[in-house]
Image 1: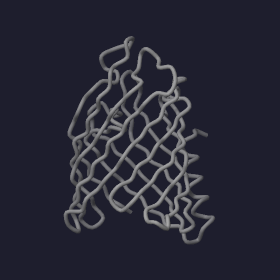
Image 2 (image 1 turned 30 degrees about the vertical axis):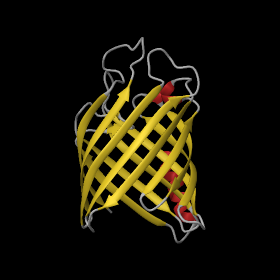
Image 3 (image 1 turned 180 degrees about the vertical axis):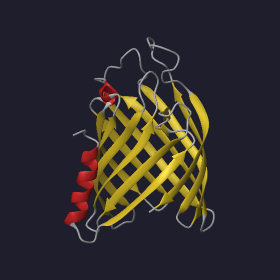
Image 4 (image 1 turned 90 degrees about the vertical axis):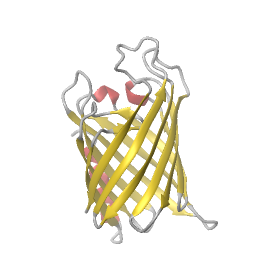
Length: 230
């Protein structure tokens, strides 16, 4: 069994352990897929799926999957499975801790895991994630991110995020040990449908021995998304 379906099994176990668990999900189509600023669809539209379970006791789990298109490899899936625990604080806001597994079905050498902790409030949230072996390398990394949102009306809102990846060990010469990415956009909700337009950008210095100019490098792009919740 491939590792990524385990997230779905875990999510079902979380839901089954608490009769008050809430399930939610969505199907999406994005004009171009970027995760933490790195492109995973070669500029083409791809379909995505998201499923999550939350319990009143604070435990949660979920799975995300996107069609994957990368240079010199067959098409496949990029999947993220995650599970964790979140709790509200008496002073306001909440904290969380959990772990995630990232799987590339056609490039298993890039698979990696992360552990994370985070804080959240009504408009802002932050998370710090640690990977002991990032994307098939021996490089240990810390990824810090801040996400924010502002409602303009009941149906329209602004959103933004900034993330920073930093290596905390030796960096292979073919990749980048630091990376800054960001996204800012606007969203519109109509019943179960959501439309988004966002500007996504990445700033990274390409490794000295990168195999080609198609590796990780600075870029920016407009990304359009249409999704339906279920």
